[in-house]
Image (cartoon, rainbow, N blue to C red; front, side, top):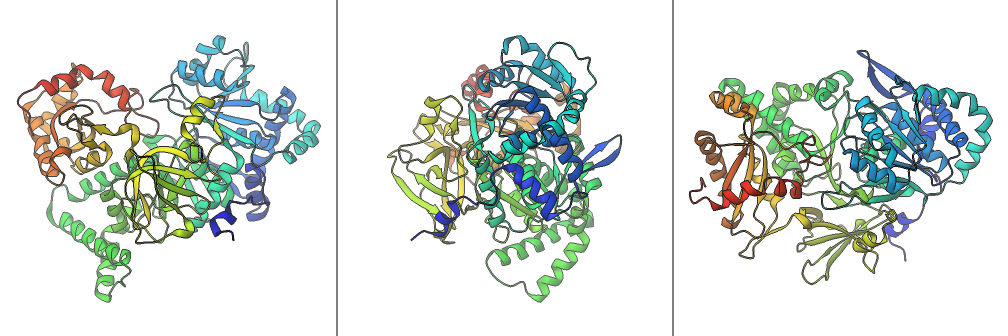
Length: 639
């Protein structure tokens, strides 16, 4: 007898392409005149209706057909988030072509590698800086036939054409190729390749994850099963790059599936103002941004002390009482409900107003969200849907259910997927969990997380050797993440490749330790060190905002650019005070004994962080190797 999970594994015959999601929203969920996308242009939010977008998709598809692209051909896209990205992608999906995503932050050499490895015939680029990057390596990319400049204000020379020229050609060809386009659309199957998304390559050469139409479609079905609160009336604010699998699925494909709307932020620096302008209900984000919002809310509410700070602290404590009662299945009593209503009016509503006043949930991915941050938002009455997944799993494998949050975990196994925990040393399977076997009291030992499901990639493009490394003989995909089950939900400990083993034989998971120290308002970023060392140390970036408030006379020290690291005894002692207190909650071997203060934050621009704001361990260890060795040589440590 088939389990519910096995039945869900079967293909849904309703749709065979990601483009069917778009058509269903345009014709069945809504109508052609409904705006789907919003972008700010010249200070005003412009609406893009389904009718307009379908016409543009038709022009784009006609150009692809005329250019001679065949099913399975690859087209590279190096764009910031914009309506054109949707138009290009939907035309590709309709014809069975393949979207090769390139992060705008990649170097020219990394860009060249992806274009050549994928054999991309066309490359779409989105601004003069990106165009210059592609043109720098164009002569070393023999498969490039055309470079399409989306802003459309460049002189067309050589292989370069403007987006307006392309669409003008498409307009004249649309009627001519209409039947051919529909014939090709009818031939697109669920198992056909939809995209190649290359891993960041932080530990080696980038690998192109082959993701199919149904990889994404099944993930959308799972998302709605676990979070039915996502509706056609919702409005997303999109700011994470569409070149990343998380934003692509959660914002782009999920919005087309349910019929929700999407507005594009003007950039990371404008997210706060755009939230107030567009008043979204949902936003996909990464833990680091939520940590910054958490810190800013606390700072604004408590700086200066007085009655304002006391009211805020009281309100948060009331929110915590309400959250804990609900989490434990207890009813919220009359008196507590009255307190909650007062806290909502005096504090929570004002915080929510800063986020547009309609925010229903944040979808958090790309890294582990510190437990205290998730609890803080819940205390305010704001939902954070934290999940777990990888590029190779399209992306999510588990997610916290909308009506049941277990903070510090990444949620329940999705309906169409299976998750196993494998002992790291013996390679034995400790447990296999799926949707039907859910037990809210279940706990397991720790090990590597393995998964199976229709969301898992076909493999790495033209790379059987690397594909064989991540799939075992039983078909399990090895995620490289370490975790265990708690209260029936999956908890991530760290990445297997991040695990540190001290010279005394202790296994250390740095992310957990970093999250403890990040509770300090004085610490903006921290990077734990200790592999093959006797004890742990760290590179710490002090919080400039907190210094402005409490240690302003040291700001000139922060602004001195003569060295990467800060050698100032008062600043060191200031950080050490909090580090000592927080370290007391951990075992001795988990506490840092020394640290260096880094002047500038780790960033994507410096090459020290991934696109999802995770520090590249290998890069940092190599870049600051000498300073790290000197830190271990010091006899007098501040901790």
